[in-house]
Length: 57
Image (cartoon, rainbow, N blue to C red; front, side, top):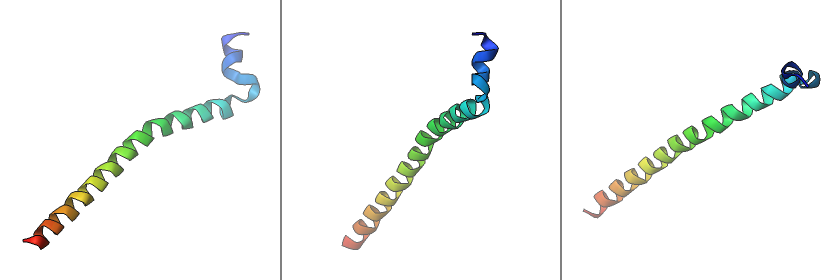
C-alpha cells in the first residue's frame, strides 16, 4: 500500500478526513466553550452572593 492509497482511503477520503477534521475541531472547541460557560456561572454566583449580602445589611 502506497502513501497515496492510504490518504485516498479507497475513494472515501473526503468522508474519512472530513470526519477526522470535524472531530478534531470539536475536541478543541469543547474545552474553550466549557471554560467560558464556567466563567459565566461563577460570575452569576458571585453576583447572587453580593446581592444577598447587600440584603442582610
